[in-house]
Image (cartoon, rainbow, N blue to C red; front, top):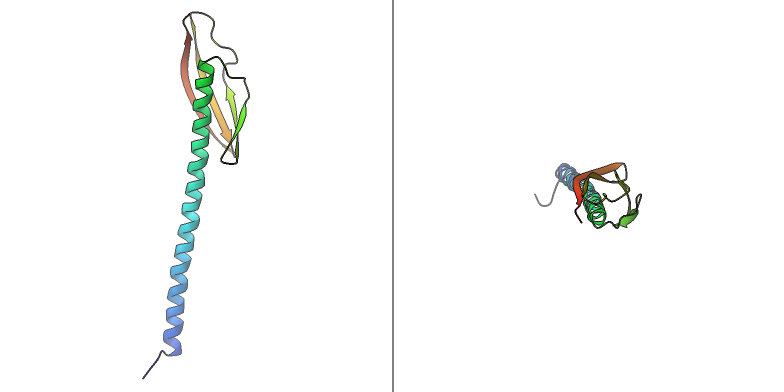
Length: 111
């Protein structure tokens, strides 16, 4: 007998379909993981930069920026730089798309 029977062809097509569905599901899953990592990276960069700017006494309160087409909002726990020979416990919060990152540090002004 030469060739495939209809039953063999149907089984082959069914196996191929399930295999392709698994590949597509993995692509969707890992695509979502990549976008979450991008968002987390943007939030972490925003909070880190906000603390660095605050320590240089250069950050206006309530700033926002765009990272990878994501609008990130930054808020600070203190709006003023510490007075001379004083320290502030400062928290920077970066928020976007319903997620947020908070970083806290102590910033001192020893002049």
